[in-house]
Image (cartoon, rainbow over all chains, first blue to last red):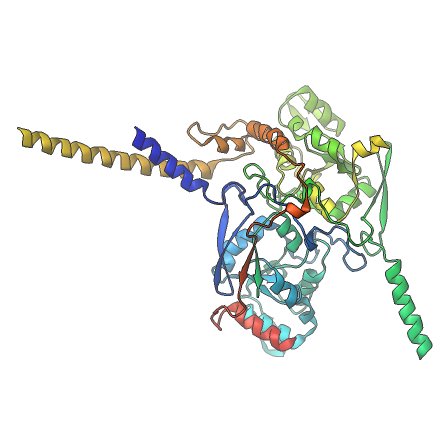
Length: 206
Length: 206
Length: 115
């Protein structure tokens, strides 16, 4: 009987896990992802007294410049939240069937970003040559007369600093303008500020 | 040439000096009236204001405070801050704070009325009264929602399940999903973008 | 006689161990199926009796208790100086070995050339 009880406790404690106090969703407490070849576990900070501090706790933002963005881009691009981003990383990015894109400048991306994200600074949107190369890497096929075959285009999720940041929507608009299918683009409007406000793991590149 | 340069520089300097933190490029503040009370919604001014209250906490225990999916149900629209402001400006329906009374008494979003989510869960006289107040008509044990108002719910933040619970309960008794809206970001996101929040205790002190 | 008894006890011990093993495997399967089917929005559904105490908060009734309890936790300690970021940012080197054919390497190369 004692043996039975100890085995039962052992089994349930395996389920509880290291990140079980503050889980992401009911079913997900952590996700293993890859960032520049290194494996990282995305989880939430387990300290219930932890606060958001630093630049992303700032609530005074200038507008013009950092105006609040609408929830819907109204161009066929779907807006998503953290749960969808994490499921996307788990099911698509890890299998090279999707890409999570940080649209902020390189210095910000290196300073701190979401694990598994690649960096396409939004300013490149005006550089047709670079954008053309990027589209090809993302699965678009060049056709004659400047057209594109988008049948194999990867699904992409794009984010920037937060709900007051326009960089991601600018990059998305550049991609759509060049012919990237809107139904394969997702807009993570909450961005890095909301990611951090939920205590989710971030990565710094030295 | 020098004069032109001077004019340009002084223009830039003056625009910086008088720079305001607007809501959008063309909206600096919004005046609304709800149940006879008047409110002004605007963004926090200045450039060094940080969130430090309980809404800067990142890791509430989950269960039960899991991160919520972006969409609460298939046909209930998720709103952001701009959509909430438009809803209030145009008087599109009832703006409901679905949290328990003690949370509302601490602080609430300007223009919201408090109807704790518990009141929507069971078939009680109180729920009947609330739904009739929304314009619903009870026929026997069933409801006719053809003349019911649109209701917009919010609660604490993207980790709060109180408003989703209310929405699910109403969906189960037939409230049209297209007449329900979900401000997923809640009072936490509202504060993170610097928008106006009412603190009843401080108001009483005045 | 003694030999026979010894052999018999040995067989019973193995049988008991095998039986316990099957019970544990069965428990794992059952626990998995129940967590998959659980719907926290159905307030009529009760959490299975053998689940851990903390999992009961998934029912609507116990969720309400959880909110009340959570408010009692100390929320007064708001000092920013004491806030600590517990392993939220993992540090990696830019020179981490990555396959040149990987998506991120290709994009990095294009971005580096363009900027």
